[in-house]
Image (tube, rainbow, N blue to C red; front, side, top):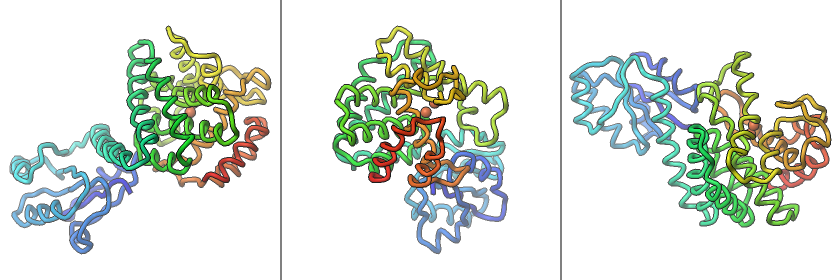
Length: 351
Ligand SMILES: [Fe+2]
Ligand SMILES: [Fe+2]
């Protein structure tokens, strides 16, 4: 549960529910239910009240005191009296109709991410360092790629080194769990992929330079998505033909960005460029087949599919590791089944 929408009175919160549920797991509860339980267990609480009567102000004040999460406020109607009363309750910001869905989702995302990033301090120091450094690197990479600037190579290599180190010492489960509640989807996905690749590589005893290469590839394999609008990347409904065509360009864009004035090895670039290719030639962007697809890209494809399947998405049921592996076992012609069998042994044991 990410967000509790706490309603005071009878007015409809359907608009807020619709905005929230597009990206988060939300629940509506009443102020009375919160009083009964003595709190609300959601990390983010969105209070919805008009604050027009003294009784409403008293009730909301009491709820604010007993609820421990990050708090946001939505009015059913914009009203000067309500706004002044909200300021007295210590709120500077609020939402009122027409509520800007993107703005509300962006505030919720920031609040949730802040909590998740703070929780990393409780992890082992190597994992904490790897996650913190990789997040900073990832954000810089996306920002620079959008501006057409070269990527921060030293930061990428240092992050990959930290990932390599942390995944040698820590457990795969802890890695996935630490990232599962981060709401920068591209970051979470790339770190799932980097963690899957490096944990697997440690488990089968690959040498350090190979693991470093896989960590680097995992971290930057979807950098081409920086050129695709978030409204398409985060879209929960069916993609239009044009949107799907744009998404399918991301491996080519990744290759272009990684080659732009940088010094990445061919394996890392092929991981980014070819991780959606399929052995039978039906993949994209270039329809490569068989030996045209490098081992690095084959492994990244396996980690990529696995990471996408076990990820938590608000619009579909979560798949367990076992369900994901069982499904992937049917992907003959797509994945390298020899590598997949080894990955399956590792992942079944680890998670
Ligand atoms: Fe991709
Ligand atoms: Fe990916």
